[in-house]
Image (tube, rainbow, N blue to C red):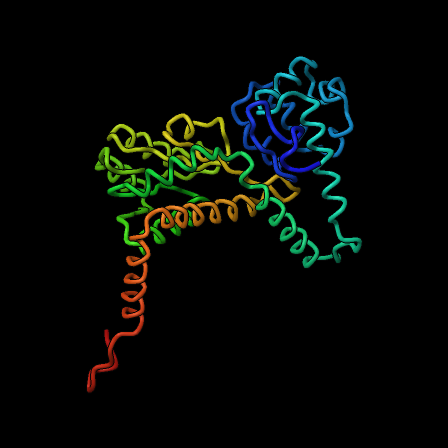
Length: 307
């Protein structure tokens, strides 16, 4: 079954690439009703079993009704339970055909190899929940922004900072303050010509949400980058960029989520630079300035010991 076959698409035409089904479910499950959320949780935690179950089996495992199972699958973006089953079976088959015959060695190195393998799989499916239209809209808006304000806290902060730096290198006015109070005050200085890029894997970080609300109140265009489609950040965003956050056994450690987030933001920056050729010259000049800072001219007879 190919990734573009009818069985791999939702009723709205959304693509579900091979290996991305559980990541998509995880990303879309945050705002479901409690009974529907239990259905999603079982699908993520026990995909190999769900792939062979009936709707009644899943309903029993989730302590709910078959009608709720079908409704949950539809609210997750699938056409129904059979659609979810077929995608899980497809993913299981692909996983089986690509799994090395030799088991990972025991001990710490085995854990490391398992995590690296899992990250690679999660990264390849990280764009499954992403809306192409939202991404295109975001690229266009960022390319025309007067000022780019990036806000993130906790585990999302490093990726957000890297994104802001890359924007600066490409000649754009960008900032990513780390202090939560400064984030809030800076957000209030934004205008309708500016863009606020808020990054939060959960979409619920209180400090990030506060700064995002302030940016929105100031009139800025808000771009939300998150791993959960039904979250406060998505509700506040003019463009919501939902990406995968990992679905394997080590997902709880957040390794895949961090790598996916960083890769996505750097890809977003490159996409913006591609639509604006002027940033190429700006990037070259920035690198020249950077090289000069790293290699200052040597002044003869200058004292070598400085306080």
